[in-house]
Image 1 (cartoon, rainbow, N blue to C red):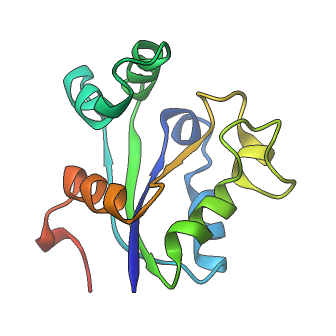
Image 2 (cartoon, one colour):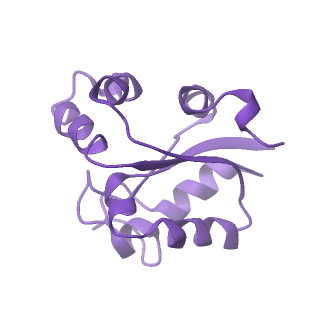
Length: 138
């Protein structure tokens, strides 16, 4: 079984879309084995998005991710990284397929409702950032 991290970003929580995102994950047969609501500090957001530190959008991204609470989840299932990414849709909601979370609800590339790990190594690092082993149900 593969695991990945999924985040409902501040815009998704603020728009009351957490239930809809969770519903879509569960309808797709994806198991949620850990979940918590947190509010990132600027330092935590900076650590989480350190890979983007040199990119022009880094500052606005970290500010956005600290603008309200987020919901972090550990998802589990066969090929769950790819399946979650398909449910989310393209980063740019204008390029996302109809019926995806980002196409249906996102306003722009940054405020795009959800985050999902892009590969197994990233997933392992991102899961450890938010969760310890006791918090993840097996």
